[in-house]
Picture 1 (cartoon, rainbow, N blue to C red):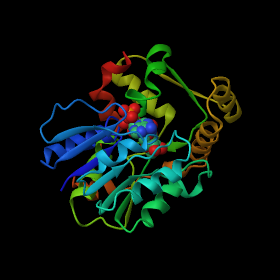
Picture 2 (cartoon, rainbow, N blue to C red):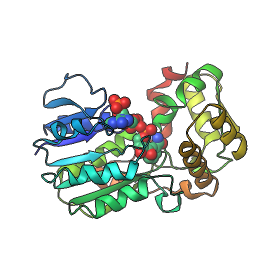
Picture 3 (cartoon, rainbow, N blue to C red):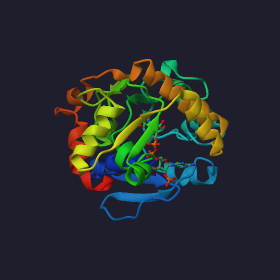
Picture 4 (cartoon, rainbow, N blue to C red):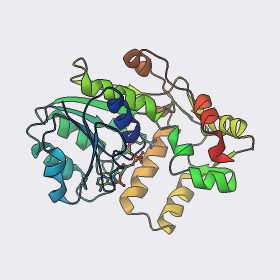
Length: 280
Ligand SMILES: NC(=O)c1ccc[n+]([C@@H]2O[C@H](COP(=O)([O-])OP(=O)(O)OC[C@H]3O[C@@H](n4cnc5c(N)ncnc54)[C@H](OP(=O)(O)O)[C@@H]3O)[C@@H](O)[C@H]2O)c1
């Protein structure tokens, strides 16, 4: 079995490639800038959602795929549907979606992607994770947090069951390589729900410096994104995600990581302690 991992350099894709390589499953690691071929069994391949010439070489000889959709591209839903059609040999698909997908604005394409995979005729598993630990230390919040010690977001004081992307990757690796997850929707969270204030307190303790959450009014947040020339759909989608948090939808905690992997989900505290130097 050969598995194509789209988004192989990303927060879930990179640990998934590692988890599959550890299982000695041949992996094709795809991205616009694919990772270097440093690991046995991992074959880097250039893949760009917006360049259809890159699709066939990436899909050649592939039996299963992990799909991180083209969320920042035009024609987002069409591209996913077309890729599924262009992959008749692929019989199993694991889709990275998002927690709360049912209540998000139409500008957020994950509901359409879910429908695309359900209608693809392939064996599918949908993963709906909560917000990632890695946003704090390996993503969009990291540089600002390190520089200013502050994170301003319109999340009020609502809790979020933050989840570690390595746990998402382990669940995805099982769904890709084992036969028990076809037709499953897996909602993944960490072991507890924390507000952003509590999360930054935890990270600050681990880093040995105070880190502060600044609650932002939703309109001020949207205005800041528009001032930074963010595309309209990004503004709609980000404000939609934070509305969901403020409404309490992200405060849930599930046992799915433990049920699937047989070990507890990683906590935010353990993530903060492991990567404490990132915020120093
Ligand atoms: N962050 C969260 O807290 C969170 C929570 C729940 C769900 N999600 C969902 O997870 C997904 C990933 O989000 P993320 O922000 O964390 O990103 P990420 O997975 O860390 O990075 C995006 C990945 O996609 C690849 N990529 C980007 N544009 C591409 C293109 N045109 N063609 C091919 N590959 C492309 C990037 O690699 P190259 O740049 O090398 O192409 C990278 O590997 C999104 O759908 C998001 O909604 C995120």
